[in-house]
Length: 276
Image (cartoon, rainbow, N blue to C red):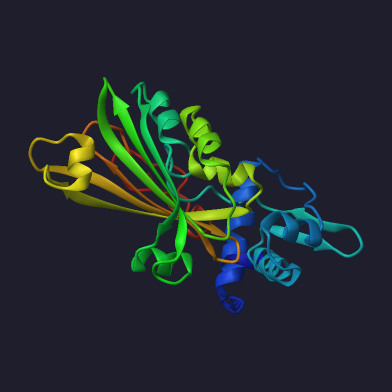
């Protein structure tokens, strides 16, 4: 019986940093299509890759060993034992991707309209709290309008942590017009982004608001709003974005999977619908 199959085996002490590192390693194993028997990099290399302390990586690997995902061989290294199942959303939300690329995959052309870059915009209290700085602190703010059929249909607004150095505004604008997202720029700058969180909610956009004027709405319309954060494996937030889409701008879907490691696995599903 593997460790994952033993319900009496206690879970190791929870820790936000270890939680994040464990999640990132699981995702990395899936994305790199690792197979049982593959050897993993040394603890020090994994720590550098995730941007965390070696002790955090060791704690995360201890959990993965408890769950039967990896196995350690004294003097030989760490090896994949069972590849974890993919988790989270699919169809564009499970991987950070510039929205025009997501739209292109769906056959919905979505171009770049106006790009407004404020290198030192004062942060509102709520965003400042997420980024872990004081309210009013100056930080880069990038606002982009997305268009289809010549009409603005969406707006994205990114706030980046004040300690992160971005390219000069003209260079950054050129990269966004070329199809890169702000997150693409962060990753290209070797910021070790490990994971993200996205909240999906509805929003009413009226013609008398700043957003309504930018998107050219003539009457109140219900829109989809994505509030997204990007984090280091330590949990520190490096980017906060609010993206608003008018109806028809982009097909956003979320799929959720059952973790089959801890579920009964029926051999077949007959016509009566009862698993056997």
